[in-house]
Length: 125
Image 1 (tube, one colour):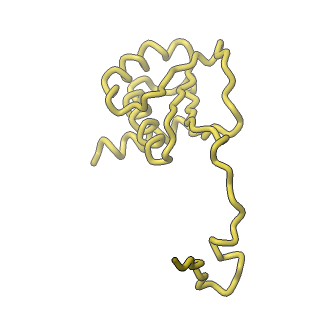
Image 2: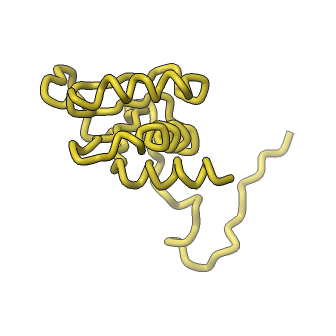
């Protein structure tokens, strides 16, 4: 059996994917975290959750945490029930004022504005 090595077509080793350092992905966070601002209009909650769920899927991650002020949690829960089949299996809400578990620095943090925009675009398709 003959083993072969992939040849680079680039003359610059910085452009050569084979020269990139190996990443150890095993210890990286698999969580998307979205922080919901107090001012966010509750009418946007379904779009926020759909955009966050789709962002998690696109990024290939498997956990979604929504950190929100306590006054938003009931309406977010109702919105989540409406799209439960789109949410990742490891989905949870965290009350912003009392969240006791640690959100690692290497979580993928997305703004609520970004995921609301994505949710609206998904709804328009």
